[in-house]
Amino acid sequence: MADARTISLRQVSAVALGNALEFFDFLSYAFFAVYIGRAFFPSADSTASLLASLATFGAGFLTRPIGAIVLGRLGDRIGRKPTMIFSFATMGVAMLGIALTPSYGTIGIAAPILVILFRLIQGFALGGEVGSSTSFLVEAAPVDRRGLYVSLQKVGQDAAFLVAGLIGFGLSSFLTDAELSSWGWRVVFIVGALTVPLGLILRRSLPETLEESDGDAPPVPAKSYLRLAVLATLILAPLSVSTYLLSYLTTYAIQTLQMPATLAFGAPIALGICGILFDPVGGWLSDRIGRKPVMIVPWALLLLTVVPAFYALEHYRTAGALWLLAGALQILTTAAVTSAIVLLTESLPKSVRCGGVAIVYALAVSIFGGSSQFIVTWLMDVTGNALAPAWYLLATGLVGLVAMILVHESLPGKAKLATLQPA
Image (cartoon, rainbow, N blue to C red; front, side):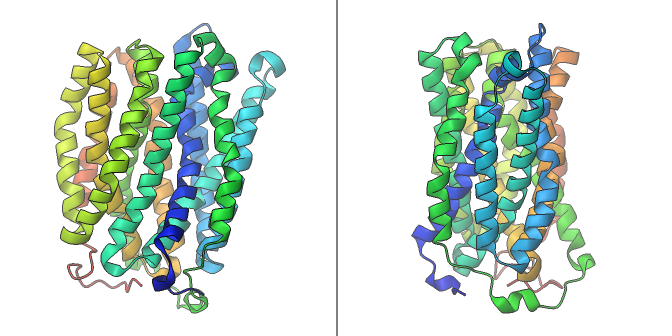
């Protein structure tokens, strides 16, 4: 087995890139939800079509906890590397499947059934991805640079935002709305599928960070980290809501604000650029001053500004307002996300780390993040209030803020003495 000190930055970057390719596919569905709804869930009511599409997007979250349990435990038994390879290959199969599934008009009811099946496969694969890749990064990093290393994973995810947004912007600039609905949206999934061989090559070259002796460690009583698991779930839940509501901005701008698609696809571009620039800053700060301050301060600022920001966007409906909102909320969210994931991962013993992170993350994302786009769309339809996304994020975010205050600091040198002995 490889010692963490022998792992190069290039190899760590390979993990982040593989993670980016998986999230590229998962997020692309959110960006193109309007067009996917028209292809597989046609309806005279555009809102009904969108809700069906978003419900299918949410279906991918149903199997994430299952993937987290199965693949997370495998990651703690056979290693991080084989789990990452398996989840990536599985995601590639599902990605290609969605791209090649004929529309409802061609094969009827079989079309939405196949899309739902592929979304379930995607969810299973992604459920095991976060635990194994995050555990690898924490174990590969020097103790005083864990936040920075894990932030590279978030950089990869935000790069996925950026690339998907650029492709969407290009497609919306050169294709008509009818062409986007019939075949244009499939291009982004095909592009993602073409990157799968590269990702597999990169991951096959990785060393293993789980030592053979780690799998033989005495079992850790669940009650010893139950408090951490509950608080981490309450923290990650609103952070996930924020992430998926930000990925929903393209659909929100097109469907609710009636903005042109070319302007709407500027939102993921702003998200990607701001995330790539500020992810490492948040990780670096968490290594210097602690995980808790870098969670609490940005998150409190986000809760203070989210409703006024959405009000300004709904009032002005301009490209500048949309891109400014996306960039500002992304900067505030990204620091908190990285710090929260590092805190959870480094607080768990190595023998249960992969499974513990995967399960906690999957539950938070599946229950809250996966349902957020459907819920806010339904709320806007029922209430007629375009600010429903902001109010929903504020409500869930307040719970997360309390949990951030209550959780123990995990930064080595500042962490409180705990019953757990994290590796």
